[in-house]
Length: 166
Image (tube, rainbow, N blue to C red):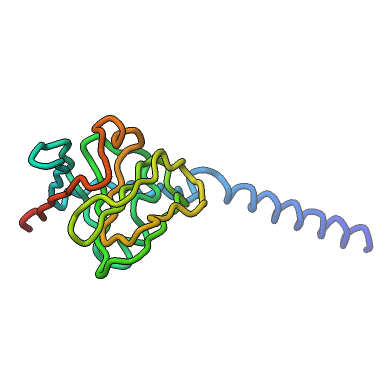
């Protein structure tokens, strides 16, 4: 009788183990695909020195709390003519970091009058170090790393942007 109970338990365990393995087959698994975040053109931005145009970008605008908190996180790439413009309700000291950001960036801090007040060049992907403005800013422009130098952007250069009509 004892051997019958043991063999019954053994067979039941094999059955349970076998069905568990069977339920792990690929055709029964849910495959979770990562969300691909596409660039959303919300407007255009130009940077000037005096009356000379230095550069132009298609911009995605981050003008609410969620968009400002998310920024360019979880995006694998960005084109040279794309940028993100963060718009804050008031001018204040700002600080950004690169958590969950996979693109090296130049971060440009801009005052309430649209003039560049400071830079953080070549911010490295996934680095959580603080990247402060050091001067009050109301806008922050993120572009691909190296473009600020390529376009010779400087303190006091001015931005002008327009939102796309929806």
